[in-house]
Length: 540
Image: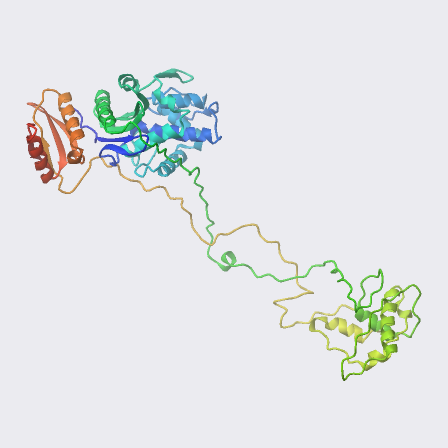
């Protein structure tokens, strides 16, 4: 008895528009086998175009890559080889060691590379695909669909036309050996075929994503679960021949949009206890630092200005003027005069001589900065008659010095006030330098979890689909397979959800459609009866 066949799936699209032409189990998650290398190559082409690597970049072969099982190029651990040769070996010979070397060379490790592959798949619209390695050998959680692989094949054709001819080569120089294409039989047998990639494992069966052109028409198709290379190529031939007749010769081309996702960065957040020191700003005391004096405002028409004089403390000048005797104005000091303002009604204007005495006293204090004690006060009568303003709370020390000029200047002891804790201008310490460490409020790890492991669907299941139809007996398995494929193409709506199976019985090969409901099985036999095709309803 032959080994059980892998689940079958097929998808055909018009490459110019991306519209589906034929589908069967197209979204069933199955093992892609070496069709995985299509994404490995897509990632490499993307890295070359973005300038991260070049075709002549030399990759060092790791022990893991060198120990990959066949098919392989024969690379040795520690060996260095140019990227161009690795691409040829992966695309043409389907070498597993070359695919692993590409992934490790681009991302640093195969694990990091497969995460990037899955992210790129999502960006391309491959929503039912997940990668666990760069070569496609069977592994839990590594799956794709016929629909998704057709999408990837279309992007390879449109996104990197400068490298697409790699998939149509029958052989190439891979640096250390001359390699032959695993797809050369189909390329030679089917007119217009120019790619793309084959794949095989025992769990996946014989897979193929192909592209072919006839005139202005181009198709991209994927077959999963062929029973042999010949059977897979025959199914692909019939799918393409049938689909070419269903699409128009001329149609508006709609190219796929290239993915905008390049690198997905992950930010690690600090794991610290949620405390006020970590989540709240630390209160700081405000301290005034020494700064240059502000620039003097332009003189107004009503002010008295001394030409080219330094800034003067008016309080100190008045104090000196009141404490010394009257003295004549030193020569060389010119006072600017302005029109005397009119007196307010009901108030007595100061005598003219008093105003002149005040101005002269101020000018005298300015000019005699080197010997202020020698100036005589002319404003003493006016100052004696005026009330002294109330001292400011923060200038109490200065007012005390003015009131008692004979006392020696001494630094006043700080007096605690109600506002000392909030604002201290004289005795607070300098602020600590601000830390450059940024602590995020959100605690714990970011989105660093591994993608959820999903189980590969090996058989399509549906409640109540435990019926099928038997279509007679045939002497060879090829005849039975040909009948099943022909009926699937003619009645895609009826058999689209069915699974094809050829039973090897003692009487011959019995073609069957299984995984049907009882109603669909009876309808199928009625339709087959109208075509004189033997058919009987069976229970699975």
